[in-house]
View 1 (cartoon, rainbow, N blue to C red):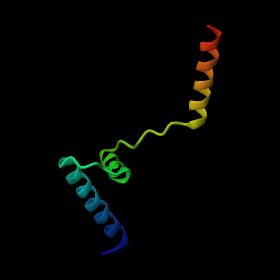
View 2 (tube, one colour):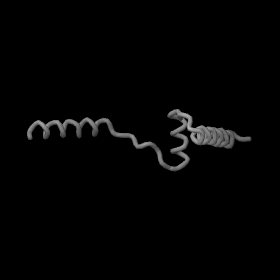
View 3 (cartoon, rainbow, N blue to C red):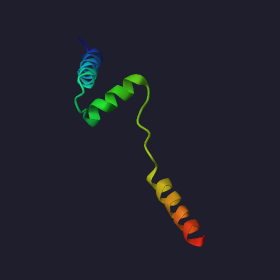
View 4 (tube, helix red, strand yellow):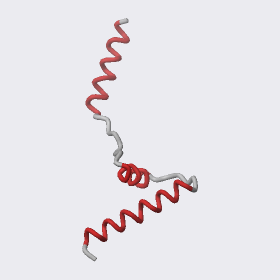
Length: 66
């Protein structure tokens, strides 16, 4: 078995374990949630920390001006 096939098999097994854990109501690890998201084509939305700080500052400025 080549390396890519082995990696795909391991990924599939990890996904199956994560889905089984979810079905039984176990608390999922971040890795398990990420592999489920990946399989669904819905990667976690990462917020840009610079934009978050900018919007917070912007809100603070206009809140204090009111």
